[in-house]
Length: 409
Image (cartoon, rainbow, N blue to C red):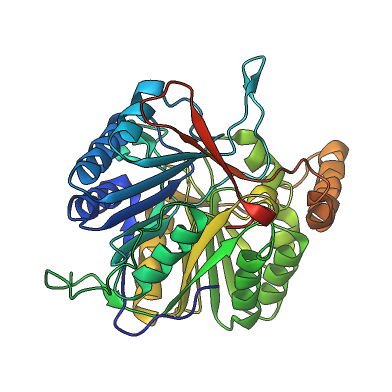
């Protein structure tokens, strides 16, 4: 966990690509020293090409630029797209790429799922949005609903330092200068806050994000709102949510009603009856796919990040969430979620999605016990020493491989 920042830090909630991408591109355009970026997905669409152009422009004016994409999520980037970045001096890395087998991607487990950006150690972004047009409303019925946080102030350096450790070779040859005063008046939407960057890896921080949720839920006295794209949590989280509801906390789950992966929603739906019997209210977002990973507890604790509440995120992937303890920020996020609940969600009535047959009931039982035992089983799944594969400029098919020792960053 990264230490709590000072009160001079400012955090702004960004909703969907319409708010997020312009802020990121503007920050990159203003970069003077460094741009460090990790993303699960980078597509060669209108958003990807804008990021490509912004990174090229930064590198050409002497800014140190490092970009890491995941080998599973960003598997279709063309050689020309990558070569343009590398030839301009961008440190481009792919996290653990794997060859296809009969046309199928084989990199299934332990993905680099973080979405982090640090610019000049003065501005940073943490959230769940990838660089894809799927995060723009104009994409249509499959456009994704999601959130991120823009950080300005000393805490941005903590995100920068984390990325320096996660991206070997990204660190400048000389220490970065101390953050300078903001060049512009603070945005009135920015709120002074306190925060912790919580990450998950397969070495020393296997359960940090899950424990952050557990601590907040177990301490809740009034309200828990969790909005999560892929909800198939571990047994400890299920138990904590049911216990909170039993002691009178209003617990609401905002989940996918139009999932982009129906089998995930079907599996999660097998848990509805168990949760509702304990008093948990379940709502489904029905306008388009929900991709957010956010939560608010008691109006003073909030989290925004990349981690779903499913076995992949909680036990296998590399993830990063920002936990913010601030009433103003939590109230703002809560208001955005309430607006979503009021206009674009439907409540799932108790019994509406309960097992309808003996087979469904058996499936629910199997799913419950699977979640209870999965953290112990995760260590048996195929593992590898995570690698960053970096193309060499001007040399076709030449690559440099950096092995991340211990599976951590």
